Image (cartoon, rainbow, N blue to C red):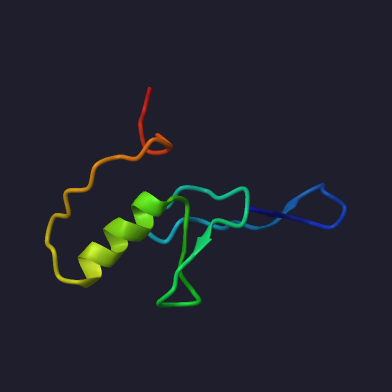
Amino acid sequence: MKFSNNGYYIEKYIKCSNCGMLLYSGGIQSKSSEKEIFCSQWCVDWSSAKAQGIEQPKLPFGHEKIHEIG
């Protein structure tokens, strides 16, 4: 999310290219595409596995717990 210079409104919404989570900071830039940005290393790995043709990647959640609900 990018706030305006005066901080009164949001100038641009930035979302994870994989899961769509709203990013409040810079995120993790993709190495394969400048247009892709991710919220966590898990999303980077999952997107990479999908690009390699794995239909349903099975990746363990890391310690960051960013995708866990509850």
